[in-house]
Length: 113
Image (cartoon, rainbow, N blue to C red; front, side, top):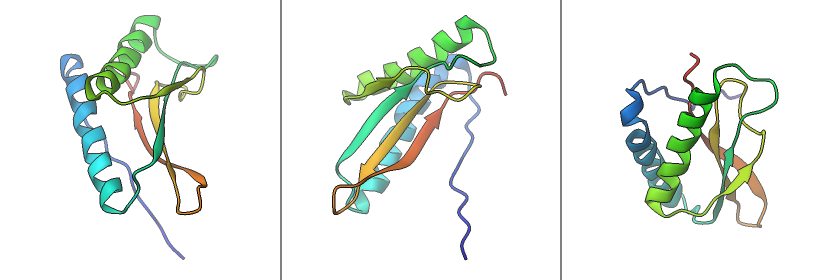
């Protein structure tokens, strides 16, 4: 048996959001690299059809996620409509020793908490 609690919540001002995302992504890279995971894929998952919150909130949250990835110079794709009902996210998928892809880390923006 096992139990894993692997999430954290960061509360910050909107103008701090992109910087906080950059810091979380850098920490994630440090941890994954330490365990030998150097190949991964990043996807920005955007607003699904059924969601809560205004267009402005979603646009701001998505811009912060994309801005953080661009600031780091990391390549990413877009998963149109793949976000959570409450906000967009960055999904990080790692590759194991035999090339299989696994969902590993997620950075989500939730202005609707």
